[in-house]
Image 1 (tube, rainbow, N blue to C red):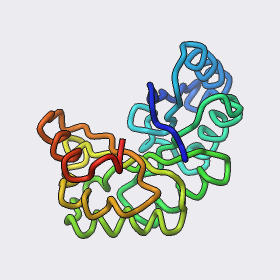
Image 2: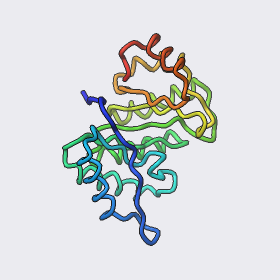
Image 3: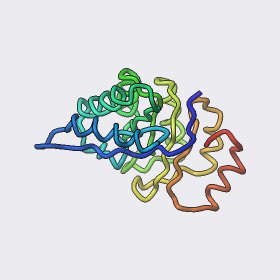
Image 4: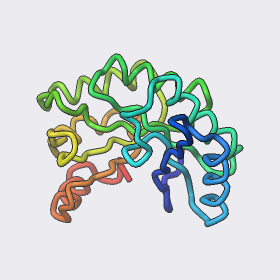
Length: 183
């Protein structure tokens, strides 16, 4: 199983003349690994994932996977506002060798808790890779509740939660209700 201990920085996506700068991205991967990180996260919010088209998204992940060359795991951002599109990006990430997925809650549409649960289950049914669920309600407009996380704790692919509400109490509740199921 994928170990998620240590620092997994979200990578920026460098651009030159309006296109992804793969040379700069490879250099960034090298510097970051040399800095002693435990893993890499391309195509997250910091990586401008919503501004990349699908081909660019795939190229960024492929480039990071190739440059990392198995030295550290690559957790690829694949969450979007659409379940179907998230499945497509998750499959693309798997196809180019990503070790896991970062799945943000669907943004803008504000799905119900049942909708969030169905969204994550559908993605991981189709693309069974280790996944980190990313709860950042300030950006998505929807909060992944502790109740929903508890229901999702039976999905073996969900290995961690990136909890960005800023609430220590919330983190304590997740630990109390979900045990050591997530990191």
